Length: 196
Image (cartoon, rainbow, N blue to C red; front, side):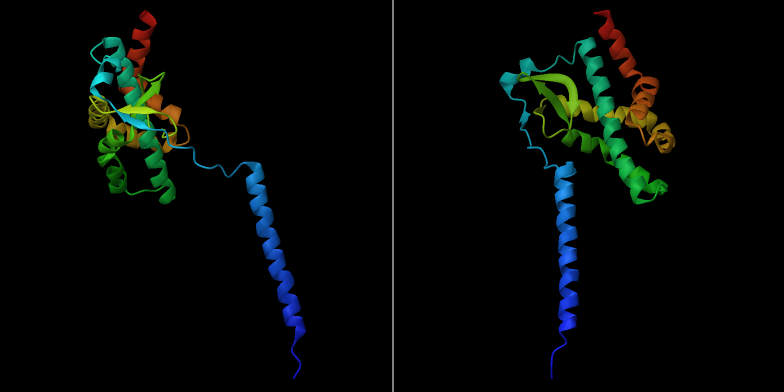
């Protein structure tokens, strides 16, 4: 009995078209820059005894105001990302308890994730979670950001949650609301910085 060659002939061009389409999509993705390899992780340093003198002086009112502002912005950025992820997952309608769960463990999360940005081997007053940038952790740094997180959430969690849906497209708007209008630490940091 002769084999039906048309079946083999029809399947082969279809498979070839599929391979061609996948190959073209892969090339287009690579050429357009949509695929970017993750940046190399930079080291995160734990503050050693000899480095403590190089840390920002959090007892100085000007430096403390800058640290408080940076910690506020860092917390809001983390909340913004986590709440956006939840809202996307729930198609813009998360349950109240789900939003509470996001904020519940936030302070431990920022404590473990953030460190002070390093410039010229010195810690700055800027908190960062970017693993592509060298950061300093330890000493008072992580306790400081965790404490600021607790202060902010205990006072402003409700207005943050209430205002988030209309501000979820712009991180800067949420940071202005929380860090400049409600908490006012960033406004104070800018005022103190301008006095110098």
